[in-house]
Image (cartoon, rainbow, N blue to C red; front, side, top):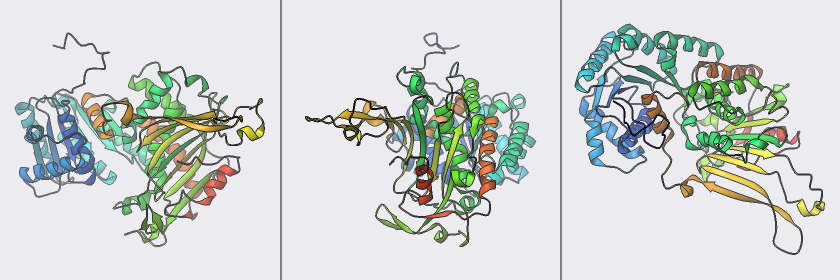
Length: 505
């Protein structure tokens, strides 16, 4: 029986899943240790996990239950957002199970099936299980086929819901994405597939929708009549870390542009949905992705870069070709800037400049809406020479918030107008700190809310944007830029040809 004091529309009360299990494949990997286990602890600490909730780790390791609990404890203490509470951890860890196994071993998956059957009775989870693929994409087919063989993915056989969470990259191009979509949808019900893009779990990204559709202030000017251009920047001060094999085979465009940045573009450009029903939101995002236009001349409308040795935050940084396990003749890009358009009535003629890069001066992700300049008819040109474009800047990370930049008179006897900024920061405006992206997304998977998860059509349409770029870049050498710079000079020249400049992030 449901709570008689609660309605489905009341969003103030916490949403708590049904009793269920979370199976993490690759539980010993970086993603699990740094993000998933801390997220599960934080959810437990906030009282958002159901009674009987259990975490089942599956990995190739000769461990017992105590070894898994010890690793998980270290990971949770190191990565948790909320304060450490030993009583919460003891309750949570008592429901941890570890199943050692290989993805190609039938006996190991049979053991996993037996373990989940036992948990159904012991923990009362009624067959409800989410499978999290914290594994390399090459292993997806193996695991999917095993889940299919054992019937673990079949809702009708298990008596509860079965869901699968697939991390990016979802394919390496359109053809591989289509093949993977077909494989996943053959094993799981398409409505039970959650393609995770952790950027969509960030509070600031979700605030794009609130900013636009909950206020009458912005939507009237959110179009080509008033907007000069849009800049979306994702800069990282780090290099490739331990991801050499993956990164050198993918590059910046496949790693980040195809998913994170095109999703941000879709949220900025989409029309208002009739409701926040997952299907309605995804339908509007898909319309934007389908309307994206590439530069007529990709060589002039895009720039690829690769970082050289330099200095970042006062420390010496090696170049990409000097990174461990990177071939000395690699042509993989660590920076991409591209001019995109959206071919619809709202955005016709407005350029969307999108850039992503590693070894930049600092870490920042932001969306900048640059408005057209006012005619300044009553002003002498000298009065407004220090005045730039009005800007609305949505800071996704690390200083989450919104900045509104506009002109104001400088105190004094002269009519001098300069830019000033009104700055809203989440950390100052709200007493509760923002949940981590994985915290929100793991909870949504367990609840069954697909609003923040791209569907197969969105993934495939994004590849239709990236594939022509990759084809045009084939055989070309990336432009060099020093570590600690904001990318190649060619990226500045790309905007300068149109009378614009990159916003200083």
